[in-house]
Image (tube, rainbow, N blue to C red; front, side, top):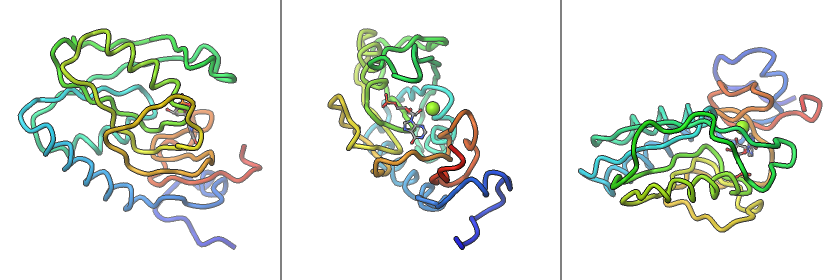
Length: 189
Ligand code: IMP
Ligand code: MG
């Protein structure tokens, strides 16, 4: 019998999780470190944090509160042409940024890099808008699954090649509000 899951979480979710991979407090601690590093690196450059909805919502909210310098934030939304095959990372922009990137120091924030195809596509798109700089902050990285060479400047955790949920990451839109990152039981998939 696995030990009880930490924190008040929905009962049905608790039943579906086989184990916790990264505890909530470890996530928060790492984000505080990342935030301090970003604040140190950017100083008074007033960086623009850019995120893709919806997975990045939780990470973005916690990261921004850990970056103690003036900053701005904007979001975009995308839909993959084919969620099944992920069509070589080609995505459709369903909501674009409202902020012009020209001359801005942009930090692209992602919850997860898996194959890297989505991120690669979006970075190339944002680069065409002539930002002064463009770097990546990612919370979770599965390097063993990478198909394109992307090295995030700020990285939270390296993960093994496992499908995980929680802290923004979903399975069929569920589990995003779990405070930790966990692995689903096979029967929940
Ligand atoms: P990729 O890097 O183009 O393969 O796609 C990365 C995206 O796939 C992430 O932003 C997540 O939305 C999703 N993703 C990848 N791995 C997982 C996982 O283990 N759990 C939930 N979503 C995932
Ligand atoms: Mg997703």
